[in-house]
Length: 333
Image (cartoon, rainbow, N blue to C red):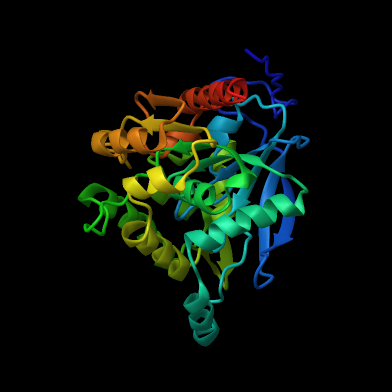
């Protein structure tokens, strides 16, 4: 078996399953979309080699949503974290200009555009291929990139997402629908301070780590005397609709995704909250195993859909999975 040289991508930080006083030293990278020339943003960690990890976040979040994984991750080729279109510092249509927003949304292709944006990001960094690591909606984007741009994908890790659409049955199941609705509901609210917003996301603001404080601050923008979320409600609703009604069925996954692309699957034991049913239902998992033939599948016991990537206590298992997946994928060559 080929030996993989691994180095901690956060070299100057100790690695331990406890909150850290120092923030992760992200570096900003700006690029433009291939069509339309829209401004886009990503964060970079570590010197980038020939096969970096490319992290893709979920429906309503942003690129800083992976601290529990990054604090524990070893990968020789570094990591890239994209703000997908409509989130973070990437292009967001101006809701105060409804005519312009309407014109943009009439041309928006949802996951197809997101997949093209990943390629544009790689091109801007002169990288031929990345190992994709998508969480939630990021897993759906990862699979769509495997379908549309297979030569740019060295592997794909699906972090509690990417389940197939059921043919003839558009829509998520009840639990997923409720979780998505609650996430989208935040987009219409205003907050007097960052602290007020954080208090709506956690039980005790005193227990928020420096990493997650950075994530919550990054989610917000100042509008007048208040704070609102940066994300575009129009694009998020469009992406949600695409996943429910136009995403790949299990049969399409089997037919459209090359067997030459290794796939890994991380499954959280619980759904959007502790004690809730997992988002990746057992029938989803079995259908994906049959269609994609993943090289590695692992459940993170005790984790929910969110803290499987955000908290050290679960992120360390997700990070170890990614390292094991990379090594197994390399040994197949």
